[in-house]
Image (cartoon, rainbow, N blue to C red):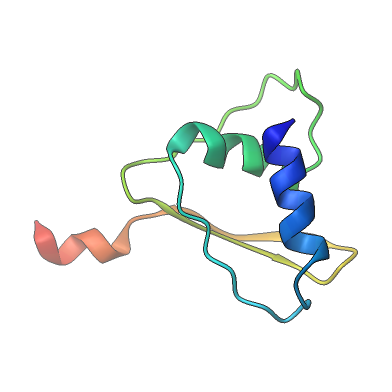
Length: 79
């Protein structure tokens, strides 16, 4: 419920063309992901969130899209 409340607040209180970064631990990111996709609480779906994974989502107010999931390209130069 906390993730749903946070996501709703982010979407409703910012202009549609806003860029917003959410920095959190993987558990909350996964719950935000489920909420963004409007999945039921018990959906039997999971997502992987690696260390510093970047997820990019977009909404136009009605439609929601997933652009990147668990992107870790920024870590390539560290290897």
